[in-house]
Image 1 (cartoon, helix red, strand yellow):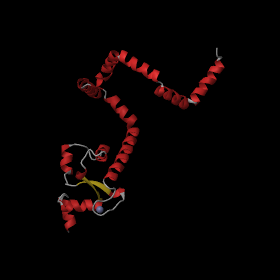
Image 2 (cartoon, rainbow, N blue to C red):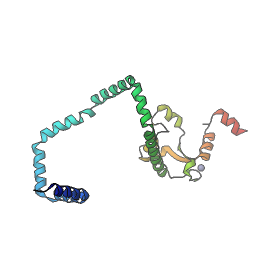
Image 3 (cartoon, rainbow, N blue to C red):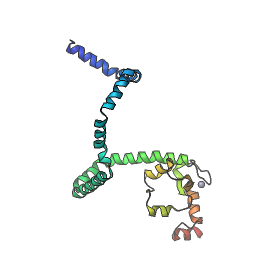
Image 4 (cartoon, rainbow, N blue to C red):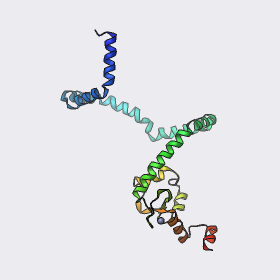
Amino acid sequence: MRSEKQKATRKEWQKKNKERLNAIQRERYRSDERIRQRQHEYALKNREKHKEYDAKKYRKFSPEIKQKNRERAKLWYINNPEKVRERLIRTRETTNAQQVARKVKWKAAAFLLLGDKCYKCGYDDARALQVDHVNGDGAKERKEKTRARTSYLFYKDIALGLETMKKYQLLCCNCNWIKRYENNEVNQHHRVYADT
Ligand SMILES: [Zn+2]
């Protein structure tokens, strides 16, 4: 029998060498045909059981259950305004930080894909670059309410190529305003001012 002290030292050692031990174990499992055979047999034998388990586990993702959950969540929101408020205040800071981080990441990725500089004049300071709709249908898109332009999802769609690339281009603020002016997309007030 091992003494308590021996057990403790052993545990300590195992903890320290966790990565190494795991690697050895992984290698053993990968290369030992007998273990794989046993795993295979086990899987075959318990197929029905696992099926049942999976069905139970993934049931919550079925459309009906999802819909039910959504409705329940909505009700909860209506019935617990105080809790909602509390939670909002509590998580506001982290949520905001997460949102900003996401936006920074996806905006950079989208810009990179769009050439990282103004399509017309080549200006490349990202602080003054904007994503422009080539056909000027930004207003229409906003009306159809696909993705909010302020959301990181707007940039994510572009970065992942979910939006067709021909639809967007990068323009610097100057070129963007000039384009708006030429396409009659500026409001009357601005037009009068710019014409005089
Ligand atoms: Zn430009």
